[in-house]
Length: 148
Image (cartoon, rainbow, N blue to C red; front, side):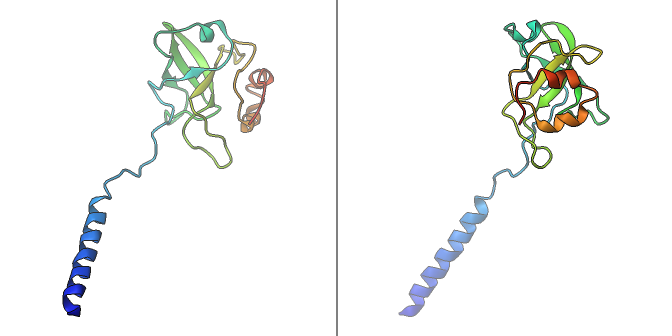
């Protein structure tokens, strides 16, 4: 009498392991949120070009790095309202270094060719590790309201 009960429990156990093997079809790859060509970004300064409502969001058309992937502190070229403008990345979705903040959107600040910011105020917090680049972008850091 113990044999039918044992065979039922073994068959149930085999069915459970088979169903577990079938349910492992989910993706475990990382989110592809790096800033590269054609990435939509959000302008977070109060410049006139960044504040006007636009039908199409600004997109990155070039990244000024060796590998073509932008991180916080890198310069990019944007297509915004039919114009080409340079910008500085001040926040991105992609997880970066340890203890570096991760943002909900890809944030940029518009800059001129010489590195001066176009706007006079940055509306969102800026990562503190941008202070390492102080010589290049000291004026951008000066208009930041808060640091994270």
